[in-house]
Length: 396
Image 1 (cartoon, one colour):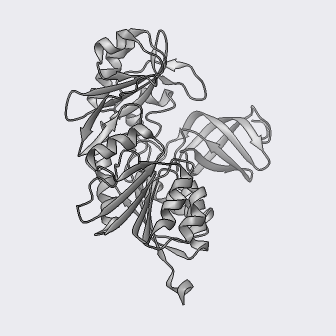
Image 2 (tube, one colour):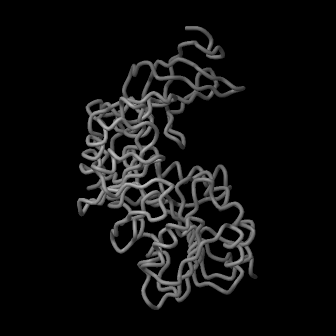
Image 3 (spheres, one colour):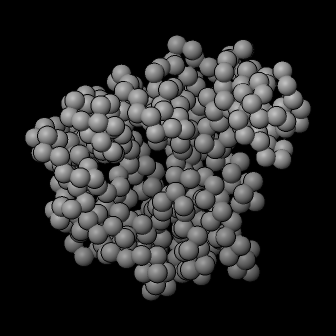
């Protein structure tokens, strides 16, 4: 083998960890190496395709010695796609353990904070849980993209998808779709939302609840008291969303006032009792309008500037935020000065959560609890919920 310093060389890597994003991590002659598809404990042969300073990235060629946490029988066709079963061969409980460690280590490395992270999961929903997916079409095939390409791969039914989602994909395949199509199914009924960039009469004929951005009225259905609106954000699994809502409710407690930032369709606040005064703010007009159908007057359209004003508007028992993957950096200065009993921060990105947590800590908020939620089994994705309370030492 050539030197690991050379791009295009084949190397042997003993994998000792997994990084946020799912890549296996090892060292070769002191150089950190990331190998997508490798698991902790694997010894693999890989080909270097990128190198910067003391870090390189390599494509997995062969598993020479499989890790104890690798289930070769668990691998499926999803290994060929960029979206679905990236960790399908990663066994439990090790998979959950590493998700917890990723959250814990991100907070320590990026945020400079120490936290004991609890893992929360629903073991009965490790397969067949996904109720929303984005598929890609090239006019002939419809499925997922191959890794690092825009080549569409038609795959057999994905074991992570709810059966109704797999059925919808099979019905869409012969319709000649080009571009992206988002499909959301109600696991309790036969309702299926389809979101396209441009109208297709052939799709609407099969799925009447089809919309495009040109439509003023969006199709929707209700699940667990929350409106699921076509073309707006909802959790990838409505079934595992129950776990997220239950864990968030525990941390909100019996609040008299709740400010719900990046509220979307009211997913995390519509379930609050009549004793709680809720104000929700989000930029998505369709989602906010749907939330107001359930909780009239409680939800408003607004950007982060409106959120900053709302934070300072009054004392809040709880400020809840569930920002996009980019986090809530723009709100951190206002949150540090907020009059609130606690801040409950829901995140789908441990790195931006850690960055924002550091800002809150510098402003006198202590991270008092942190949990990793396994909302995306057999993928590297992990949700987290952190609770911040005023650091009493800062107040003395």
